[in-house]
Amino acid sequence: MLLAEYNEKETLEYLRKEQRQLGREEGRKEGREEGRKEGRKEGREEGKLLGKSALVLALLEDIDRIPDGLRSHIQEEHDEKRLKEWCRLAAHVKSVEEFQEKYQDI
Image 1 (cartoon, one colour):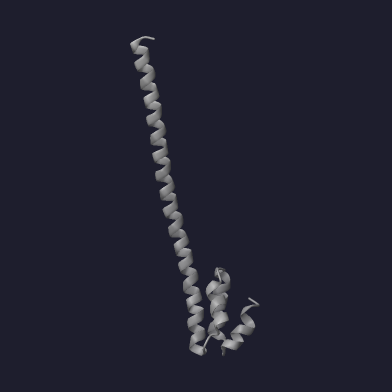
Image 2 (cartoon, helix red, strand yellow):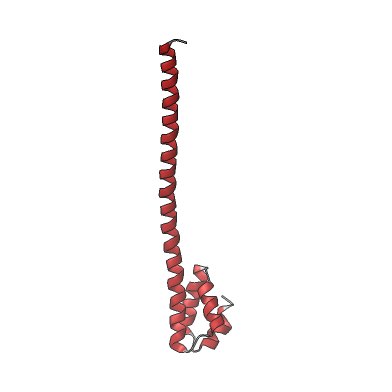
């Protein structure tokens, strides 16, 4: 093998390795950015849920003491539509007991 052929082959191999490395780095960069976007989205969604459950609890606390089981159930709810309906219900009931009777039907 001639020196020129050897150098050409070595150069091509080097360029291929560099290209693969650049591809991996770009892929990691894109993955990190996608992860950040997804994390922000999940954080906003979780914040909405926490806000709605906090509102339900605040409305009920204005009426009376909330039993621990009910409090836990409200805090563990992850259905945004259901929490929204519970907010409406909590705003209109006259007692925590009335809320307990009606909230599971929603």
